[in-house]
Length: 440
Image (cartoon, rainbow, N blue to C red; front, side, top):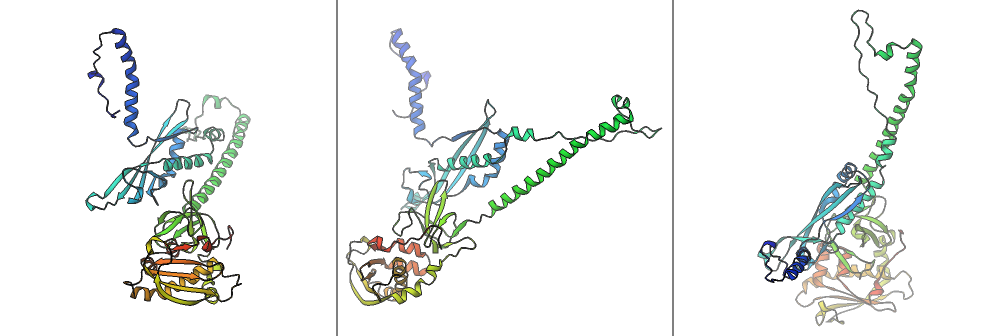
């Protein structure tokens, strides 16, 4: 199957047998379908669609409110686009643009089709080959938009209930007056009514006026409620913002968790939960991730640095002491430092049974040592490839960092979380920090 079909007009069937010719012509539609399927298989996936019971006008009105969600920047391509000719990690500055088409069905419902284009800058090793490329969406963006539309339409009354509660407008027009008497002309029906009948007919209109007033009051209350909802949507109170570019968003709340992507400064995410060290965020749709708490600007009323960590540096200085410093080959099998000379710093607990000398305190003390020894490491960059911290205790462990990583951290281009994710931990579980959900 080559993916190209010959025009039907040029297809010839040399067999003189009438029955064989008929069989071939009968099989031709199937062959054309298979060729078409092969051609469509190499193209971008078609639009995603969903049917809603609301009218076309109601759906289009809801889509106007979702307009900001139909285009924007993607935090990463992984999970949003299908891999094509190049690995997704070779792309940068990913953006998406969704086009929505609404059509009415025979039953009065609405069919919504969503088609999304994903573009990103491809960075090739040869600069002349770099440039923006169109990628294939994997359907997550389309499904997420359709889910948002479903949620928005579910909060609105149906057309039937709206018509049921509606009242007919009362049209009032001035009546022409007679030039002789100054009285207004009336219809023939009103002219035949007695004064008492006219008074009764006017009194009968008062309930309708009261219904109109009650309807207007209800509409005002609903409008005020919608304004409050829009205000909360425009200024959400559960957003967290990234402090520094390069902050990792990981799959699990662990310093050794898989990095999903690196967030840029000022990127915002919806906070789902948090603990002493980690914040659980929504990436997009059903995608979730974890971010180191000190790397975020927390919502109002929640500290970026938890109370437990605010004094951790001072406490760590009273828990550990440096017992030995030396230069030697890296004592491990980590590829970035394998066989290279490093500065090895041995650390011990001042009191072995100290209960507060856990993973968090070790990380704080390690951070203080990296800061303290950076000047020496930079001065000996030709001799030393990195630094190793060894905690000599029953629950000890080893932390290793390369000199370029420490340099980036000191320059402020790496957050604390990004620093730890580029370090080597042995054993990893010794430096796992976690706290109770929702805790401070």
